[in-house]
Length: 133
Image (cartoon, rainbow, N blue to C red):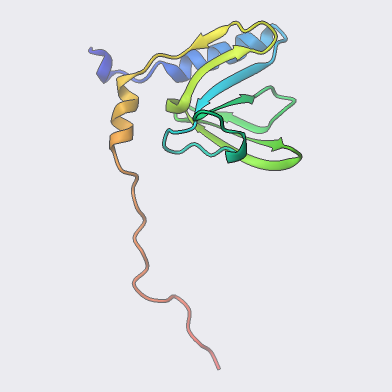
């Protein structure tokens, strides 16, 4: 089977490094390419189309990592935010304390996803509300 036909490796390597960093009692950070489609992060903290996020369990709430994205709640300058990071946007994961981690290479599967336009929901043809007197 050709690499292009296989599922991306990034989600599996990401979860492995995340667990390994936590098992060693270190703090996992991720580097996010904010120019990728679907990234939802606070805009005021973006520098050069990147943001670095602390994803330690004590720093985030409702953390969920799937094969498609990482999603969690966090506070930025005291303001609660819901964060969504597609796997295609994660450039690296590393331990804050020593910098050990992994940078992710480009994968062809993520280029295919970017070419597809997101499905649009059909707009209602009529107003579902009516005036009642």
